[in-house]
Length: 161
Image (cartoon, rainbow, N blue to C red):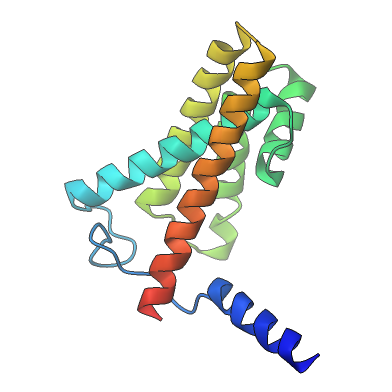
């Protein structure tokens, strides 16, 4: 039993992140409204990939993240697209930050726009043709890509700890 407990602790240590990893494209200071071109480019690419993965999961109908469930329910209730509903829900949540006196950064604002645009454009393009094999392959590719990003982030985090 002690052996199992030791292995479980060492396995779970991978997921303990005590600080945000610093990589080549990291911003020089928090809440930087004028990041370098490299930082801004990596932010936009990462948000686009995330939005693309979310939209593929929505179209595949195999399940989505909790935030997308909220946006999808909102979209179906008032009969709008998932991209627009993601944008509206994100803006509402951003306004709920005001009483907390939290200042949103550039990443937060870009998150709202890029993910909403990516999800809005991807759904209409993919729904036009629905071969089951293509949907399964795109869903699998999305899951693999999201998992790979998480693994890379965890690996970077463990290096800086």
